[in-house]
Length: 205
Image 1 (cartoon, one colour):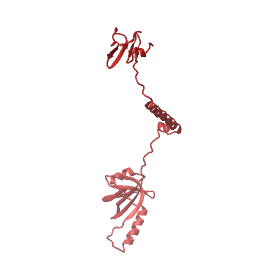
Image 2: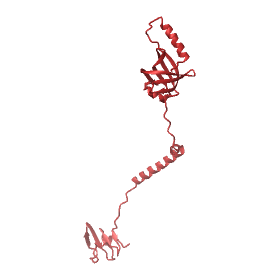
Image 3: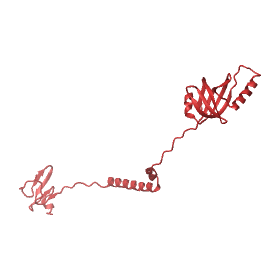
Image 4: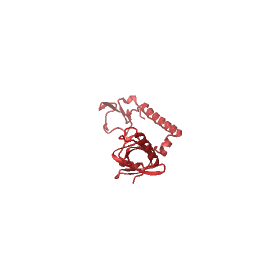
């Protein structure tokens, strides 16, 4: 047996009495506000706590359901137990049926991301200053090496005695050019070899 609050009954009687002077066939709608206690999806019944009394109302296939202005199914109201709701009721014989259900539910807010220890450390002024110094040193190192003069590989122009390359003959006339791979090699009388210079232009080292 479904119950109606005293407030709803009084409002209904006042509406019906006023409507008696007009069109008796026009159904009058009353609004009741309360807190959702339960929603029976199979039976299509909604129970509200109104003025400290629980009242159960019947939904029909014409009942519209909204949560924060968004249309939802009647069965989804089971997730909004404890939330405020305003219902529009229409008389159906000696009882009332739900015409519209408007639920006001709190909007869930996304949790703020937790600050990691590394994030707080990197955001500190000391860490920022150290990072700037390290970065500046790294940039200076790279730029300095890029601008450093390129050291050319120097091939000796003179080979002391005992250090002549294998491609030079062990016996060869003194101060006569020995041509090898585009270079002139001279065998000096003190035992060494001079490359691209006569023995008179070099001295033993």
